[in-house]
Length: 277
Image (cartoon, rainbow, N blue to C red; front, side):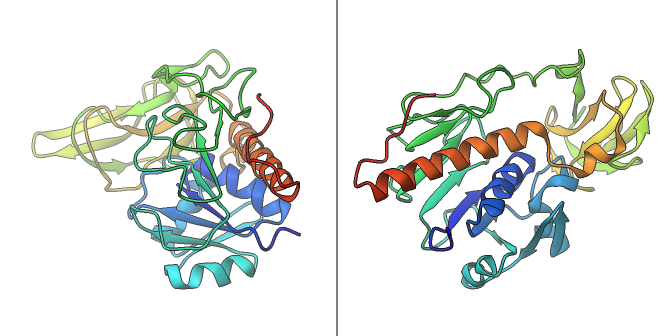
């Protein structure tokens, strides 16, 4: 039904993958653009993993790294092509979604496509994009704004079972990441999960509480001090690490809503603006 309306998603991390999943299941051909190497933490549920692995599967999605010239054909065939690049690839698409979650607008323009959607803070609907989708947990998560901005960045992740900012693992120093645990492992409070290795020594990364390792940045990634390198989840269902999250699917649902509103209004001959909230 929507095969003539290709979508480009910039950023194939876990939230971007929720967007890809919603659009793909609704029948849209979806292309992803990602960095090499990607800086994704929840790699088990991210199509960006195809950049380093060549091919990856997330639930019913099969993502494959391709060249830009191959992307349209691969998407039409039902797979998720992942192309590499820091800038907007030269592709003829109907929709561009900035899912990089940089908390600021890096280079996205409202002129990038007939519909441009920004995720989270850093975008202003009607100025640098047509629509903004809320990414903060709470009653407004996944809502579509056709005017204005998403809620400002608090610098802290949402609270899950009483755990907020402490869920995030951050680099204690600048250096290369080396893990001694894996995504999906149950770990104890204070357990050493890995180290940052630098010329100044080895600095341990420890678990802040007993829980499940939900995400880890790629082995040997070079990171700055304080950079997010992983997260631990107080929820300990082992299947969770292989399933796209409720948050990602909610945001993806907001993007799908924005796309459908846009297409409906285009077909009706009206402007792309949609209902508020």
